Amino acid sequence: IKYLGIWLMARCSTIKEDNYVKLVLEIKKDLQKWGRLSMLGRIATIKTNILPRILFLFQTSPIKLDKKLFNELNKITMKFIWSGKKSENYKIINAEVDLDSPPGNYTIK
Image 1 (tube, one colour):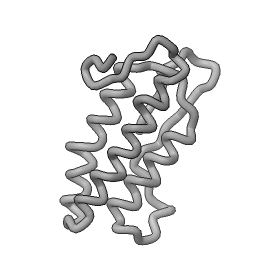
Image 2: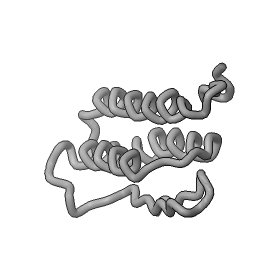
Image 3: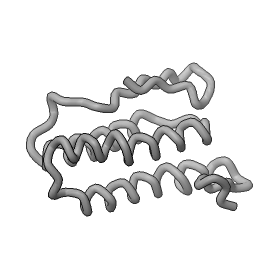
Image 4: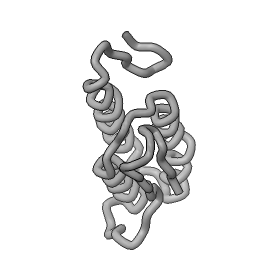
């Protein structure tokens, strides 16, 4: 069942695949379409389109995520903002994941 844009399943084990993995694929596809923007346009796209979609999903489905997802999102956004140029020294999404805390307890700086 899809409710407010979130896929809800009887098994909690598939929530990540049904929501987060699909969102990452959608973001990759969308960013490929918008590749010919100026740097300010690319930053505005991340701030107004990509981050709200990510944050909405984080807020509505508080499941335990690993750092791999945050690293993937960081890699995608950096590659988009810097147009594929070297971007190892720059970060937008820095996720702190405390594995001992309750699920859904993340900090994005």
